[in-house]
Length: 178
Image 1: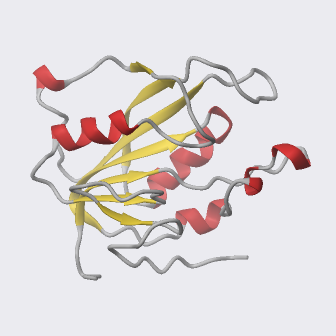
Image 2: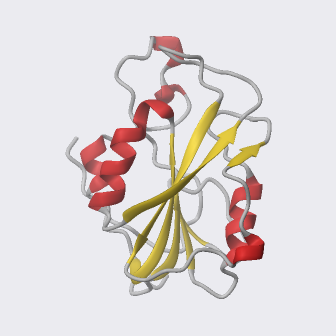
């Protein structure tokens, strides 16, 4: 395990903590969550010129932007994942999530012919699982760049991973506030 390695592409789906969920709807029923400050304090092993792809639910959009800034990235754009079926929600029953894109330093978007529409449609499967297509798309855009998936649930060829559900390729010592 090389803990001196830095990555040009960071892909992350933080385990956001929700305060208002009823006991049978708590995210913690599926996996451990983290406080916002703990997520913000994770030392991200990124290159000075890098891109961040960060997942956010509609209810966590402001926190996601805070995390992006705390990790040193500037917001650039977003993709909407239309899950084709609706789920939980307080104001609206959520049918989509955002994939926010931020850059640090100088980092170019994908080549013009490779760019896709800002809405991606794929039916959701199990709780919190993101479409493999998105990770594969990022890989096709940046095949030669070093890539790290944070909060990973599976090992993917061409990516280093860090998370509590996989054998880690990189060890991040996250500071926790409790």
